[in-house]
Image 1 (cartoon, helix red, strand yellow):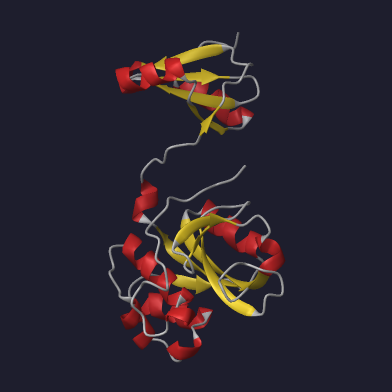
Image 2 (cartoon, one colour):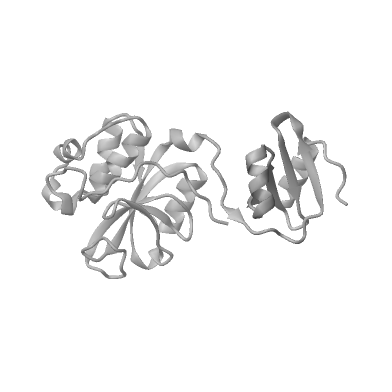
Length: 236
């Protein structure tokens, strides 16, 4: 199952106003990270704190910058899966150094080192500063340069519940559990899927026209614990 962090600001290195836009992938990510924590560092300011901004930046310099500016961070010299899976499970931001072409597209043996901000486990949703966009790269492990960092603090934007993507109706639904205190109805399935039906009039009308469910997968133990917490009857 893919775990995803919230989307913070997207910062494009070519439009961010730095003195070395072609080399500012790391600086653009630092700016994006800072903005999530309410710290408005300009790319030019970040450049001024780097030992060799004309040649790009490296992970130790990024870690030093974040720690010096009140955001604890550590270097993670591991494969992407280990680093990103661990960071996302802790709801922490991270970045990864990957091989890319000169346009910032992750490319195996591309010859250029490029930083991406990590926002999900496989298939690797990222903020790519080359474009200032949120992009998915399923082949990212083939571009791995085994270096990156983790911010050791939870992003404020990730502390709010995030919407789950719409899916089509599942045919194995068997029963409903209502939670009137919060105006929601949960629908469960034997496979352990959990569906939320929003009960306000506008959303209900939309649902009647086009099935639109928010869902995620839970374990059997979580399923039973949630049923018990809701005071649900036995499975029918």
